[in-house]
Length: 76
Image (cartoon, rainbow, N blue to C red; front, side, top):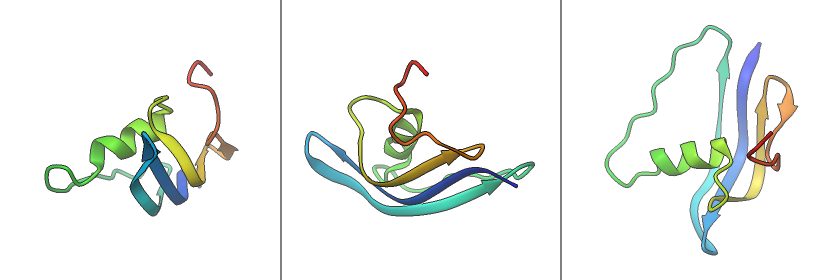
């Protein structure tokens, strides 16, 4: 069962695309690591997944436990 699914996600900050066409999924019980060099987008991806207001999802979907949270307000 997928706990998190990111489908074709693109994200912008101040009108500039910073992440483009990111897709992955995490299954229940799975342990994963996000690795990469400095400035490769790790923190930007985390901020977008958490719904930080400066990080605008311009394309794609974020599905958490079967619910589309792509445009869910941060306080929810």
